[in-house]
Length: 144
Picture 1: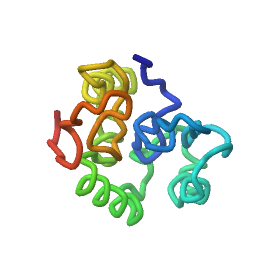
Picture 2 (picture 1 turned 180 degrees about the vertical axis):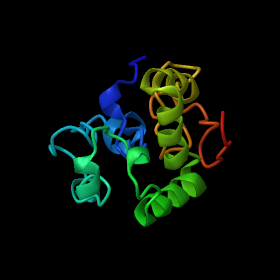
Picture 3 (picture 1 turned 120 degrees about the vertical axis):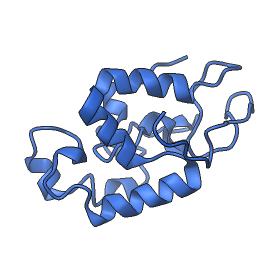
């Protein structure tokens, strides 16, 4: 299993290591915080990633902004909570309260396939490596 790294966590709380663009075998994306090579267009022009207020913060996560949660964060959170079972707001709040290291440990445990040890994609119902069912898919379980 490849472990999660700090650079996998986007300012909005998206765990880029779980994104379908990161997990694809051909030209994987390097994640939000890295260069734009192989990054999907919607990520390159992301309102959150390119937010001027975020750029002025001394901390890399949106939860430290005075406008948090902004309209875009609420929209993003609603979509991911409803469709994929992952809450961006929960993620950045957890990081703010418990720290990035504890968050990464929790995410590794939650999103690692018990059959093959690879990370699930948040965007798929089954492991892309062995097709084991992703029990996290589409079901937001609240604080875990």
